[in-house]
Length: 575
Image (cartoon, rainbow, N blue to C red):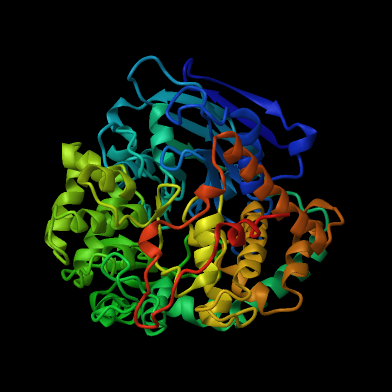
């Protein structure tokens, strides 16, 4: 029987409670967003006692379903001021599910400055002093926690940025190698964890039984089809395993949509130097790992280990978004400099998208020169040291723009835009503008039909069809996040007539229920409605569902324009 684990961080006590009936059928993002809406005052200070950090495995997490190990974390965002769900791979989601924990809720706020850590095993919960880990980067903290509690233990930790409660602070999870390569990155949720004075959460499911499956044979049949679907698709079976998400650098550059020098053009002259192809070439030459999963049970395996010139691990989970944010966006072209920026971000505990965009804005304001990778590395180190410039950078792109008096700041709801220009990939642009999360490509990945021609073919340079595309993808993505599935399964789902039905079959077999595809769509809509309602209560209006003025110019090489009105965009999530 699943329980909710509530941890009062003020009194450093905990209790388990039964799951209320209205939450029983929810998991992942569906659960975090519902609980944030129900329990967090929308106008509260994100770093105050009234905010809560809610951690929830997906509905399929802990089962043998392929690619079902994603973890959702929700709260009111210090960065956007609205609702936030961010998710990542790692070990924690599946272990919580096997322990029968439907959600962890960190609530309250200590009056003192002492840090704690939470250790969860089948024998119970411990809230222990964590002062010995305070000030540590995530690499050292996770290494020490694995040494103490065992390899392959689930660990979530914050670095110095989270301890400073900076708005770009992430929560890092231990990856398969025990390094902090998996990030709950967006929205500053590491700052919320820091405000609760929780340095780390350790989850160990040793000795737990496997999750019961209501219809094991039906589950086995559905999962076999599911794995077949993922392995046979050109994106999930070939492109992503071969080059990781970095396969997109050359693809998006060729499409004229790779934002370069703070969104001035869609082509980067040095794209080849920061491409997936170049990354894999270096990995092979230096004895790294080209393809591995971000969590146990992943069959796509788009993560990797990138070594330095001496063959020593530099970073892992080297993503397209990171290569762009620290690369084309800033015009840095040295892949090793970008890898070092990725490593530092994981160690200090900041979101690579937000921080890369912030460095570009800092370059815009003259704080450092365009393309100067070494200067960018030194500036990022300042975040870990807690200096003045470090605190400015660590609070994200909008904050940097405010500090430097810059009007060219690519943010929506104060969250930095990811690696696709909205004028050249309009389906994603609509998502940036309208997602309750702020600018977020994962909320409705219009690149599918706009660029990759997966699940349809919708012109990325014209308005036609892109509001509907974003709407459908935002609904589907919310449901995928609720299931605990990797977003990339969407490629295979979109291109297989039985894609959605197979997910439904997995859920029905696991729980002994009778969902239909229509129920999945209804779930996605209900999640988005919960998130919209929270933001409405927080004071957001349709004027917040817009791109900044800097996008009101033509965008080379296609000279495309952003031509959606306020009312056009309001139709996106009107259901």
